[in-house]
Image (cartoon, one colour):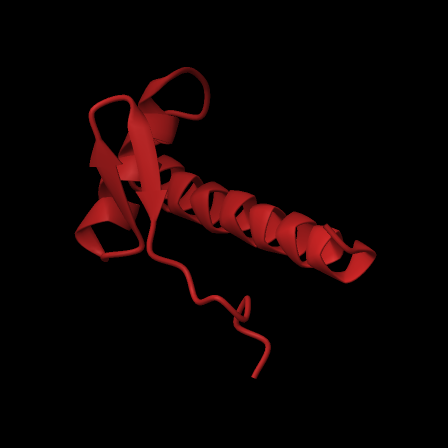
Amino acid sequence: MTLRDRLQELRTRWRRRRLLSAYSRVFTAKTGKRVGFTPLMAAYEQAERDGVLELDGEDVVWHWPDDGGSA
């Protein structure tokens, strides 16, 4: 794996975490619940509804652009 591939992988991971964090903040704004497991699960559910990821048993399958969205 080249350095460029590794950097792209890290950038994608960082963007996914930011996306889930944004979904979690929306849930917090709507409900007022800030801590615990519930905001994280709400973030996963909303991302799944939006078609960004798919929860497959214990695995999370991301439907993410290969280029990392850098267009």
